[in-house]
Image (cartoon, rainbow, N blue to C red):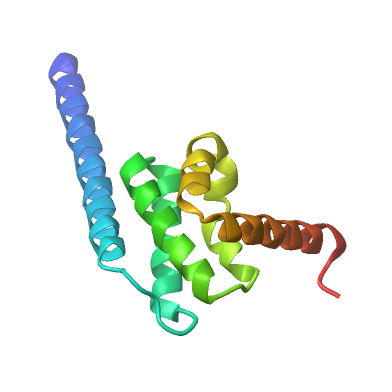
Length: 135
């Protein structure tokens, strides 16, 4: 009787883990599709774009995907072309810190030299604000 219970419990755990993995894969595909539709960014971006970048960043923090990371970095580079606000770096945090070894090289490759310098300055501004406060 106990063996049957243990087998049922194990089967349930396997099914639940499969469902969680399928859900993560579906989210990744959704973010990939939505990011790949972005070719140009008008004005300074909008709340929908900022939310998409943030959500994709959270997904990468939890479920790493090099393909999603490359697409996110590409869109982020395009966003830096039109918006130089320091809060943009916060859209990638804490994923950009947690996954620095994986995401750093991908972001470096995607950023133009101008945007790479800008990104480094914006990150420094965020770090300084965290240390010294906003005032």
